[in-house]
Length: 124
Image 1 (cartoon, one colour):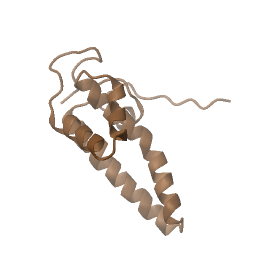
Image 2 (cartoon, rainbow, N blue to C red):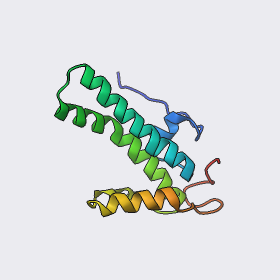
Image 3 (cartoon, one colour):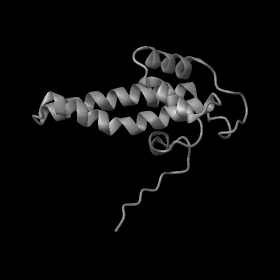
Image 4 (cartoon, one colour):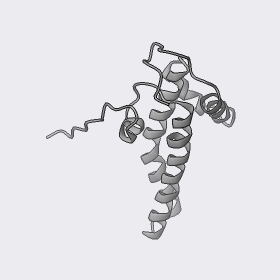
């Protein structure tokens, strides 16, 4: 029997923010969920796996694997709020400059006012 996950349609729901790539998120939501929450979850994962006795290299791999999709989902929605294609997420693959560009563009630049091709403006 296939596993079926139902993502809530409420755009402010944490599950929707972390799992869906549809819609738009504000700069505030990007900082709260895409930076602070993922950083906190990463630290918590490191601590718990360290307590469990997992070796450091495996901890890094496990935590990164678990957090890659939520990071992509939040970042994708932020790029869409700027009316840019979701492929802009790939800018982070450029060493150093890509991460800096994505952080500045997603964290500090306002989204497009009103509706754009990716939907209505995000809730405040």
